[in-house]
Length: 118
Image (cartoon, rainbow, N blue to C red; front, side, top):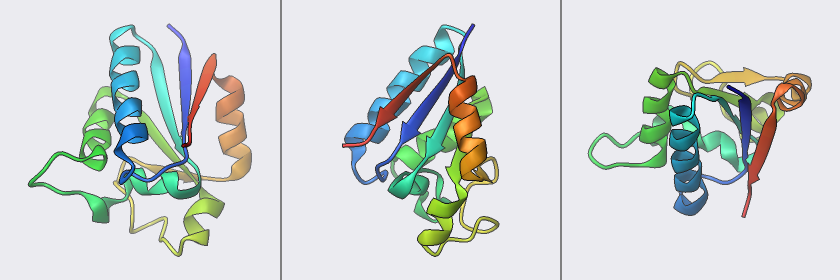
């Protein structure tokens, strides 16, 4: 099927956007689409391993589980470093940290992309 890119600008503490992304991703996977989630701005926290809460469901837990179904998570390098986070230590192992150029290439290669930002 097609390639979908989702730009996620908000933190997992604003559950509406993260939960909307989770449900959207589930639906896209059911239809056979390839999904890449791009963390921009505070969206990089959606795959921060220090926010995993084993005792309760959270968007970070759900996103981590989605990597088992082929969902890719890409964080913007300047967004990560501007927040004092370590690309090597602070994110779930399957998340990648990429340059702005690579993030733009992912958006260009997508058949559709969506932004969740408010």
